[in-house]
Length: 461
Image 1 (cartoon, rainbow, N blue to C red):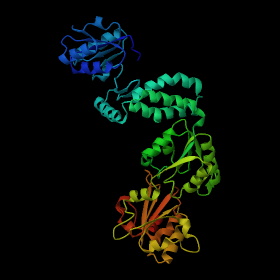
Image 2 (image 1 turned 180 degrees about the vertical axis):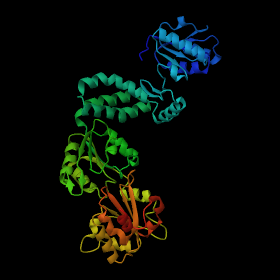
Image 3 (image 1 turned 90 degrees about the vertical axis):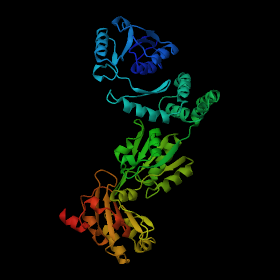
């Protein structure tokens, strides 16, 4: 509410009135405190802050010209009377700690004027709002107010010189995160102004940038903090089909979203087309997040995309994500390595086992390594048969997770001999991760509620 040059009236003698006085003292209002027996601290605050203190019992004539009124008397009957008088005068009123009597609530405030952050609970939990305020206050630099004040000095120039949309957003992003912000934090406002002026003079030199970001296995709360920050900064989000909408929605609402999904048997774009798209967006000066399921560097074809970006001279970075093997192991509470049992881990796809010869890593499986098979449901019989033929025991423990990390995940377990039945599980439509090895026997199978073997689960289904 605009209160500059207007009166705000607080009625009360003690701590509640003082708290509201301190809050309103941060505004541009003319403050009036009505108190018939003010406590010494309230009197001292009024004197130090040039507030008008009326030493008298409350009377409606003291509130007639107010823009806002606060009833802070700690007397329900008197607060109710003040509210009634305010309503008669059509003046908004707040009765402290009496939500039912309030026309408005006062939030906890993080003040970096002209920047302000308000935390409200609709009157339900003022202490909770104060706890949240304290956490936010610790996060934000004290210099943000000065930086925001400097921004107001450049706003008219930016309106005139910087086109709307991406160029203007990019200018302000650089202003609030680059050398201008750092100089302000050091207290060097002259350097901050020079930096801001340089930004205006170099509008056409802003380079594009691509971040290859791991979206994790599906659950949005497994996204890293860095990934979330980059999503909020992105002009364009280029995402795989397996990335859930909830993760994509963590990006800026006005960011362009381009699906380049790859599912088995359905490729919306070839890898060459994706590479060309990333290069084109980077050359256009866009801030791009290439959002990949799991981790970009594990079966994510990030190597091909990085090579294309390097060749084109486009800057890029890689942000790791939680890969599906780790999420599946966490779902089953199983160790991927286990002292004295398995000291190595193999990450592979089922298609690696369809050739004429076993891959080199197969010997590791025979020596006790845990094998994590991605995208292996349709070739489960081949995987099992080839490993058994190579000498791996048919009784080796197997765990299977569909939609790892998500609420609707399915957990199945059995042995290597049971694995061929996985291909016949037509109800498994989501991405499937298969974990094979002696360490898998240490899983919490009771938690999954699975039957003894995959084959028995199939029969029951």
